[in-house]
Length: 104
Image 1 (cartoon, one colour):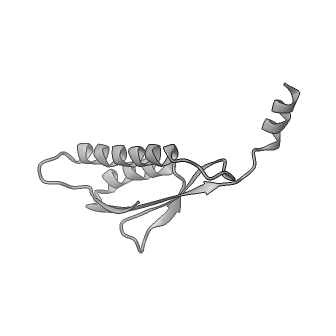
Image 2 (cartoon, rainbow, N blue to C red; image 1 turned 60 degrees about the vertical axis):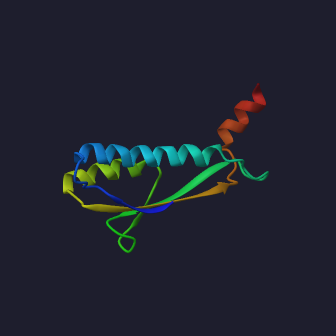
């Protein structure tokens, strides 16, 4: 997803517009996580960027996107750019989880 969101709309309060943007982002994450993983992957990993426009976007974690959107309301941004790219991750589980599963 690469999209510029309008945060100020004529007939809506800014809080409602922001809520609809957050809802759309959460729905995107949920939809991407439901996709079938390749055989060698363990989970979906998301590369996220956020900013006023594509040129000024900075990398964030998926958990920080919603927090960053709250800051746009305080600073009264008219628009924001959000880029979310999902990719399968083949990272191994941490050793603590592996040891716990072996003991059982």
